Image (tube, helix red, strand yellow):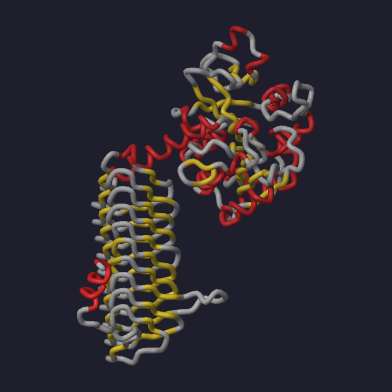
Length: 476
């Protein structure tokens, strides 16, 4: 008996898997100029969901997205995932995609093929498909599903009714009346043993109405070559659903968001009127936090425990500590809020806002690149931009930090314990020292020393009897 090479021995004991994700399509039926796989469900692109599932099974270096239409946009949008990209310049079918990717995939022992527009696929199903493929020692394993309405899908024709082995995959247009009654469909997810697959891939033909290379034809090609072709049926047919229309995108989005809300509630989050709340897939929320109706929690937002997020608030890519109260109508974008802070109602925290422990940002206060210290308060009708505020500071109603001179942005610094009177204008660059006071309605252009009082307004003039005299003049 010939001895196995070192690589063959390793392949048997620890086979190398690549995952190829089909992501080159135009999405013509979506009536969109944008790449199909960049359309979003659950708050992130379709392709991002599939990549996340793939990365739970193999490392990023073994994942290859095959891209084509608007390839640069797709590559840029998913660059942070760390996966590889293979360019399919001409989109000539699913089989052609793997022909293009042959150089990258051929060194592996097996290739898992996923669809970039099917975001519900789970790591558990991918692993089950992989393990079934290995256990059957198959050349090709396809993921099948049984649908109530299989219209439009290719039907799986098994060699026998209870056999794992597949005779053919028949597209609906080519199916007989009897075959169309079959409810078991081909999902478009596969595992191939690399060696027989690439030995026979050049036998694919474009002899079909669309003149494309179909990966489904590999079932017949490998079967004729006496290679084993089997099917594994998923228990959850929803996992394989793709998104070819805007209506299907909406259905997928609803499924993903419903599952997310249920996951959070199971983990101890209270959500009143769950169907009214929009929560993205990657959001994390701590136990005993309460979400009132009509809130949106988006992006990579992290919310701690024991918070309350009141209605009509939108929080995007932000981090909130424990015990934070967000009153109605607030908007937070790339902001950080420490434990016990109180926001709103109707506060707007723009990117770079950092709100300290126990601090208050009140109604109609807008912040941008603000550091607000522990226990400090800006409760009313205020704009604080490019500003650093220490601890225990009170910012009166109507205060504005004038940070832009028409060319450059400048910084305002307000040190611990300072008091800024209502309707003050702080013209940056300027510093208000520790414990200093700024009188109401002042326009401050120079630094204010610690413990000083600064007044920057006209002296009040009182003219006794002036109003009475004015009224008398009107009567004449």
